Image (tube, rainbow, N blue to C red; front, side):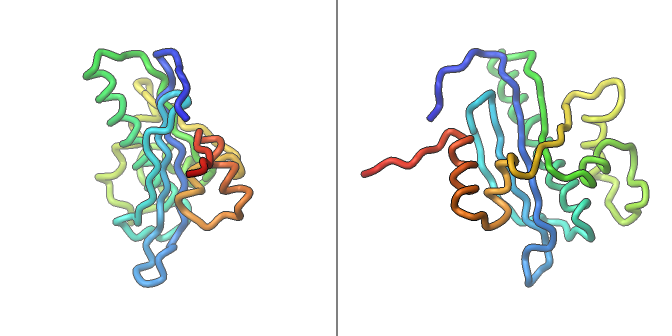
Amino acid sequence: TMRWQQSGQTARATVDAAHAGCSRTRRSTRGLVLWHGSHVLKVQSATQTVVATSTGEAEFYGIMRGTAAILGLMGILNDYGQYGFDMECETDATAGRGMMLKRGVGKNKHMDTKIMWAQSVYVGEHSKVKLNKVDTEKNESDIATKVLDPSRFDQHLCSMGYRYCEG
């Protein structure tokens, strides 16, 4: 259900990652829910292309993909003459958030520097996107990374505007 909303809403991505979820390749699964205001535009689950060596690193890559999705949405909206949106990314991962909000790789020396572009979106005087911490129970992107009990699954579907219909 997509109800009428005023223009100028927030562009937001909720992200999550499940570290080494694939038993064969040990690659992590990332989940993404892309929002424009109260409308869900995209729900995505994908295996990460890079093998993460920690949960924090897997979450960092998930945040990076959410950041790319937000910036892509903003590019589309700007092409249609829509400007001035707030941009937010939400995660339940403290470690991934900490890695994103600093400059450089820090102790994670094995990470490829080409992925560090996302840090510039959050850190510094020209930061464009807010990176918010969200409670794990309220992170809708969990729906794309792990098996949830039916009540929590339904809770996330309802919060995203989905409902069950007969017929």
